[in-house]
Amino acid sequence: MIPKLSDLDLKGRAVFLRVDFNVPLDKKTFEITDDTRMKAAVPTIIKIISDGGNVILMSHFGRPKEGPEDKYSLKHLVRHLGELLDGKEIQFADDCIGESAVQKAASLKPGDVLLLENLRFYKEEEKGDEAFAEKLAKLGDVYVNDAFGTAHRAHASTAVIAKFFPREKRMFGLLMESEIKAAEKVLKDAEKPFVAIIGGAKVSDKILILENLLDRATDIIIGGGMAYTFFKAEGGNIGSSLCEDERIGTAKEIMDKATEKGSCIHLPSDSIIADKFANDANISSSMSTTIPDNWMGLDIGQMACDMFTKVIHNAKTILWNGPMGVFEMDNFQHGTKAIAQAVAEATQKGAYSLVGGGDSVAAVNQFGFTDKVSYVSTGGGAMLEFFEGKALPGIAAISE
Ligand code: 3PG
Ligand code: MG
Image (tube, rainbow, N blue to C red; front, side):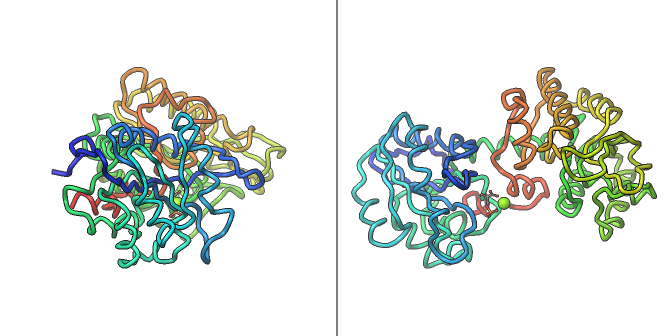
């Protein structure tokens, strides 16, 4: 049995909490533009504080190349974190190991919160360096991993560190628990019909998830730029739409396997097409297999919206990863919005819906459907790898 945060007496303990505070910042003002991931970690922080523990927070932030860089400093997050915790004072250590971190961590009192500087200012973090993980581990009595968004990385603070804590003192945080529960419900326990909606630009990013879903999903809806490689595989004319020529074979294989396994693949029969990749392009609509030369599909068409909506309304379980079109441009957001709407309606009728992946989550937020789906994951890559059937290092380190 994996120990739970709620089982352990946290009074007076220094809890070393790995979070994923990799949030987008405005490049000029350093204001956070989407705090979903920070908000998601708040319940665990509050739980530790109210149980009388103190919290040492660690996270990576961005992908710094060579040591400290101001734009990747976690100091930019301190104020907002304090606000999310009702005005609580947040202490900050300008290093994640070393004297300042050790001293600040050692002088914490029950209920205090300390945020350490970006773990990736040390190359050792991404290398999964043992000595670095051990140094980090010395800062706390209990290790809690709440960083689902980073669970697919076998880094020092997400995976390697766990072994420096005894079995009963390493565990998942509340966010990690709910992410795993939501993902497992869909991957292992989906009530049928199970409809998977997979979109995005590239087939190559989604091959493994598609293959894994062929064994599980009743229907797989494919939208976004990746759909055109499938149309090309069927011999269609896709104009200048996105196409990965080297994946045409893969697309064919996926369609053949679907027929074998009895999973139904739905492609968008029609498309909204444009004569350039821009919101102010000339716009028309076309069947997806007869797109004129020099025109490209940038969204699914109305027939596809209606057809996909029907399939989604019939679902008991829904997994959505990836947008249907270039929804960042107003003129090509209709398809993604229609799908968000259909997922919300199916959820209202009792289906369980899980949305994950940076773009689809951004779309659900932008169109105001966040509270109308069952679960919105904080994982992009992590969620994808989970549904590819891979063991995530951040989960394995605690559960094994
Ligand atoms: C993410 O945003 O995908 C996670 O925080 C992991 O970050 P990474 O992709 O830079 O490892
Ligand atoms: Mg990533």
